[in-house]
Amino acid sequence: MSGGSPAGPSREETVDHEPLEVLVDLLCEVETSLSREKVREVTAQVVHGRARQRRIALELMASPQVLRTGLSPCAIRVGTLLMMLKRAGAEQLAHPKCRVCGSELVTYLHRRARDWGCGPCLKKPETCASCGDVRAVRTRDRHGRPHCERCQSRDSDPTEALVAVLAGLEPALNRAQVLAALEQTARSYARRRQVAWAVVDRPDLLTGQGASAPVPGVLRFIDALALAGARAVIMPPCPRCGNQCPLKEPVDGQRLCASCVQMSRAVPCDRCGKTKPKNHRDECLFLISAQWHDVCRAAHW
Image 1 (cartoon, helix red, strand yellow):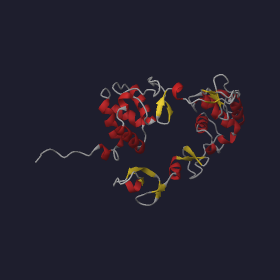
Image 2: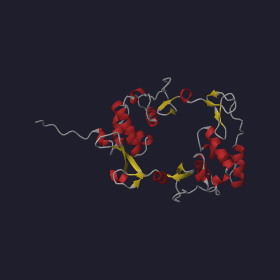
Image 3: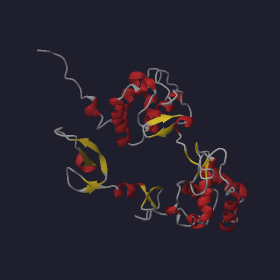
Image 4: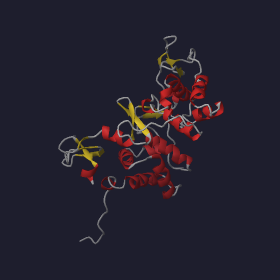
């Protein structure tokens, strides 16, 4: 008889209960320059939540070569994780690379489906709303229509109109404070214009109707104005539960809090039969077919 100790649980068994540790194990098998604690710290910052950590761990278990090649197809979160670990000093892990031209991606990942790459390679050409040619999109107008480099958008800058709206709503705020609040809504000028246009078209978004905001930057703008001392602006409560909490994704045209968004996606659990938010997707234990079961949190734990 063999006197060896019994083998521990496999990764497939562990990933359900300790997805972060399995994910760190996979990364540390390749990366030896960073300490395990540093890898865990960066991973936890990039991959939030047990369900997402589980999905990414399963993805890397199925395709571990992406850690050495940096090439998609793979979940965009894996590319972001590689980028952040390289910034933290990782040496053995690969930089994420453009799927088309192979260039290393250091600052930003563009995505098309499960492929990541650089902007020139992955940005899909569209029909310019001005000239009608199919070209790379340079800007979009206030209605979201694309314009090429040659035409661009002829819409006027909405910044001054936004300052005028805030002057009537919050006379105590000066122009510099309004523009500073707008700067905090998004990194790109195009997205900041979207916020400005949304508020100019509907000033009531700032006074309680923010749940109808067409872009999430409007809610960040309200937050920034409140921090600057605005009194008339109102951070809207969740339209479904009424709680005063951050609003997330839109459901039926209204942005809801995270709990209500989750409840809006509830489905009948295949194990307990109750309608609850999904915890994860669990493979049929009998493997008779390719059927996958929706498993609620209570039934799983």
